[in-house]
Length: 263
Image (cartoon, rainbow, N blue to C red; front, side):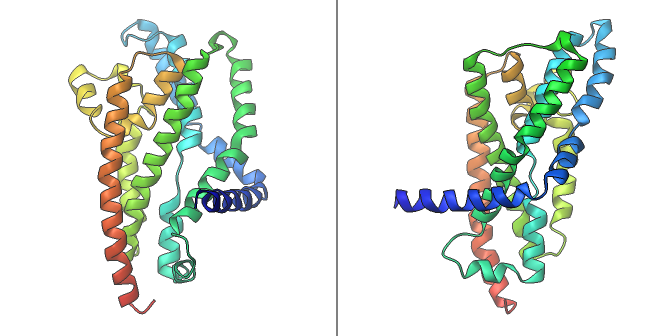
């Protein structure tokens, strides 16, 4: 059973990785499209010169570089693909396969991460060439913990968006829910500003939501900002369990509705 699962996963990843390599130019554009942290870095580093935010300009520069790296690894688009499959009826073909369709989407996302790696490395190198004073080497333990956390953060982000995608069984514009969610995610995840600049009461509230654990939490680990590791993993696990339960319930109900429509 385990051997079969490994062979299926390897086949999916290999196929989708080869597919992604056909779109190298688009991958570069996608990587550049996630450069919002660099733009905000310029704003916050200038504002931090007055010493009002508890973080120095150097710490902010490193944080936004880490946020850029995190953003490259947790970007998700499954809702648009799944919505298209449901509306066009393409999902019916995948339902005939002895494999949950979600694994096709998940494998495609993971393969795209590996195909994007060279572009991320080039952009990070360019950043350090332009801002050599920001260069630092995280400890090996920080790097390993960062890789582990970013994998969980991506999985949580994927699970949440895939749960919203299941609304496509009932509406043709499930992606509009993601667009609204993304506005909240943008401000509370740490992408626009690190949580250290939030008022204490707001920061405490935000830390109980899933948003900061998708960007701020892994970014802070990479640059060495203080974070509560235990609480972080606990909150991510709880939100993951909640969305997983909702996801499975919606999947079962959605399939009945989908088949009832004649698919």
